Image 1 (cartoon, rainbow, N blue to C red):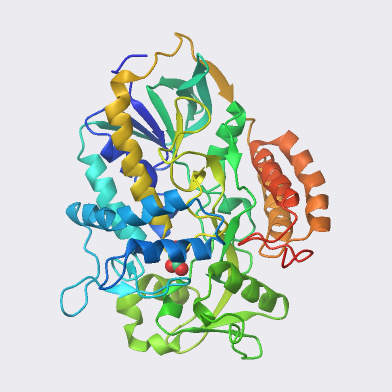
Image 2 (cartoon, rainbow, N blue to C red):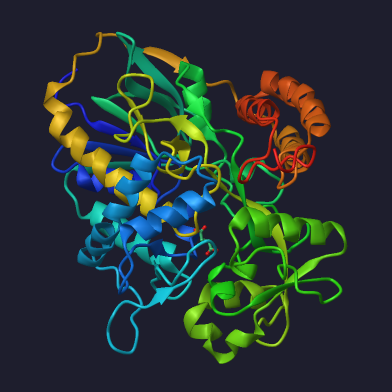
Length: 481
Ligand code: SIN
């Protein structure tokens, strides 16, 4: 290994690009499936960035809400790091040109979402925060001389030398194969929502990074904790569903069942703004009984300015949320589990790092607090980039030969549809041992056929192993365990 070898980053969402930018001037090779930020869940994020920026708010208050939402399965030291770094992360984005929405007096406008005890969320372009942030980050990356970007590649293996990661193997769109050697490898491949029948994620959030980690035996953790967003737009037959942001409930919208009854009344003191797992279960059960709607008519004429993304998605499907309730359904949204990392994004395999949703450092516990995910990508991505920049010259050399460890081939399209249906029925907001046991037998067969099956298998096994309910992992056969 020489210091001229780049830091290889797989994935172009917020965590990958924040890492790449912070690593300057060390050379970075950024490998992505799609150009720009296309394919990254960060681009679709409607929630904003949580930061204790308002009068009287403190990182400790933000940390308390993060741990409450996470059922105290969180690592308190990592939560502390996240919440203490949040204001600085917001200022860094402002320096890169992100124009956060302001109140009439010119201060940052703060929104409120589920699980927060007060308004604490900054937004840009109303509900278009992810798009605005990614626009600025991609522009900064394009203007940075130290980042080389290759889009249209599928990273399907890691290179190992002297028992450490020293590069990646990938295929190009024309089927040709290549290897790239690097002084460090960073997985920033996002989550797993696309392994479920209905998701708020883009199709590329398919667990590809977990499959790479499995191929090299890197440690995974907390895999059973999958967050379902309570309100995706209900569009039967579609896989990737538009999100109906929680900020609408922060602005006074309410959930109802098909008989018009308020769904969250008497369920939790925070009502419609209860932690996401609790709301998702209520909506899920209402959907089984005939349907659920979000009545956001209270937003009225402010929709176009504050929630342009939701308004457009609804109008595209013949629903006018200013005058009629929005049909909603829970959708797989965020994976709290992932590749086990420490506070510095190191995995159990030397040379391999993971950051953002693919990683699990314990910050989210058993259920992520709203608007902590863009924040996580920013805080830990910047931290990792700076460390790799400073460490670049000092790492131990890898062996001359990189041995390829490839993940298995992909499932065919039909098998993938079957896997998504299976995951939705067994690994949804309500789980039970009998269904999970039956699903395990099926995913074992699918694991022999393709890498997505291998990822599903470890998720189902983790859910079976946790016999009690905790956070987003709710077992109807052990509801209060
Ligand atoms: C939302 O806008 O409801 C999603 C925010 C998040 O996932 O943090």
